[in-house]
Image 1 (cartoon, rainbow, N blue to C red):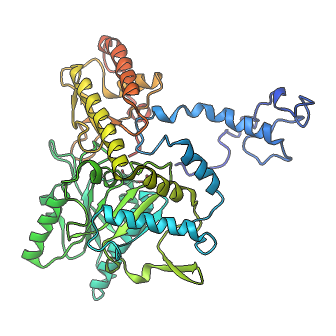
Image 2 (cartoon, rainbow, N blue to C red):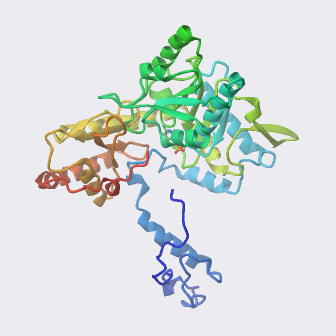
Image 3 (spheres, rainbow, N blue to C red):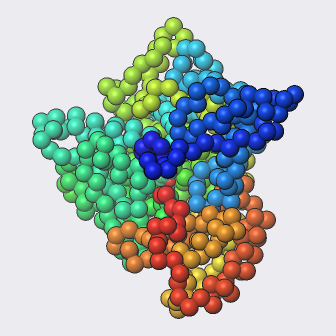
Length: 472
Ligand SMILES: *Cc1c(COP(=O)(O)O)cnc(C)c1O
């Protein structure tokens, strides 16, 4: 999101205005109320009829394209009409007004309880958690709790000592923000060879007495792979035995915490591991809700320092809250509860399994084309990354991304971070709503493009920044 800076036009250009269409006028008089076109970057002097204002905004937004063809995003782009109706019914409710909207507050509480059980909190009744605007806010809250706990344990040395957080270089940008905003040193484990995420040994090796925690990602936005949470915890157990350092783990399950519980039930990554002290997820990713809702949960209230908690009025008493925002929409939380109720475990399992089947099938077919090699196969998150085979010299992944965009598909291409800056990949995120039929159409389009790409004399896209739409 750019930090907007006033009018985009240069001072030399005349100020622009929106275009009027006589049809936009009130029915009886096509040009009524339309004597002047509204300006772009200045508050118009007077009002417009609602139908005209609606049409102007609606028409401009046509150029955003179709979110369903956006294979770059993890965020939900399709919900049932009933969910849309419920959300519209709740757009006027402010989530912070617990006293005024006690039923909305109750639905949030039920969602937290359901997640505590889903993630195997040892005592779901004593797990604590909250909704957020997304995983970014949830990660900020979890990171703050880690930092505060460390500061309390080290009150004799803090603030002179500088806290640090251990994670893979593949973490989502919210962790870099957390470290920047809250003045924590980010200790990033680089990629090495075919290892594209954090490994247990490197994580433990970077820990010291100023480590507030280790972040394990389920799964990585770069390639959809799950980090080995149990192995990381085991390495930290061994570290504690050796040195006495007791380092908590936060699991960033933005995507995977709503995938693994349904289709990888044997994978132990959650509160079953005693070292996991908190978990976040994005309700608006594989939680299957429109943006923005996320969740943060702590194993017990002991993991969330009481002095970070603020209280608001609720039914004559008070309710503890933990959030960066004050006001925030209630509709997404209602939609999350609706989706939990609507799908249940079986429904979520069916939806996530379908997405994974589509991802695996698509990955196999892309590999079979012969021009590409897979980094991941879509068998963890329903996400896979692939690159060109070494003998492909006439085109690169950025060309593929650009040409697919001509067909309406958004498939991002991007370069990996340290120490694999030599590697550029394409990534496909399969979500509910990206059906097997749409996957067939993507394959058809790719098959149609490939002969042209193979015929190129050299890769055309040198400006890699312009070619890609990746925001990890
Ligand atoms: C998407 C994502 C985030 C950020 O989540 P938002 O809900 O977009 O704020 C953080 N971590 C991981 C691993 C993610 O995939």
